[in-house]
Length: 184
Image 1 (cartoon, rainbow, N blue to C red):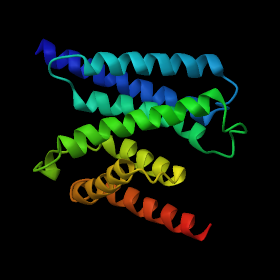
Image 2 (image 1 turned 90 degrees about the horizontal axis):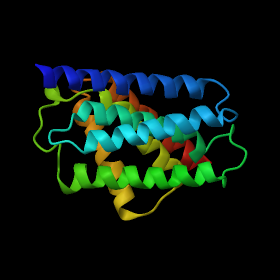
Image 3 (image 1 turned 45 degrees about the vertical axis):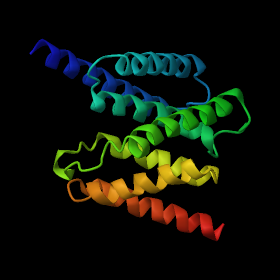
């Protein structure tokens, strides 16, 4: 019971951090460097700790990744960010690549979703996967493993839509973004 409670507490902490990131981004996120730096450090520390245990909690890890991706997404491409070659923008690109490599290792190489029942899948990763796909669409990356990660995530949306309707909504949003990119 104690192990379960600590996992639950860590999951709550990760969800709280995601909420703080989303709140920070809803304000004037370009001017509050101290808050951004503290959120980044906290998320990176929490991710390292979550990955460095014998039996990791994948919901907690997904929340942390969601918060990291949310924190960096505006710096990948946004009208609100004037200097896209700023150190923060460069770090955002590095973070996106690291997250993509982790997804590649888990989703494609280890096939962690292969054979999983959609009824047993958590919705926590949907936000995270949607933003990773969107970031790859905006970056126009032609790297084969980046394209494969985006393709597999989209397939995951189709599979998970059986259980979570939000997956189908995210898939439609990605298709709309793709159509807008083709017109531009």
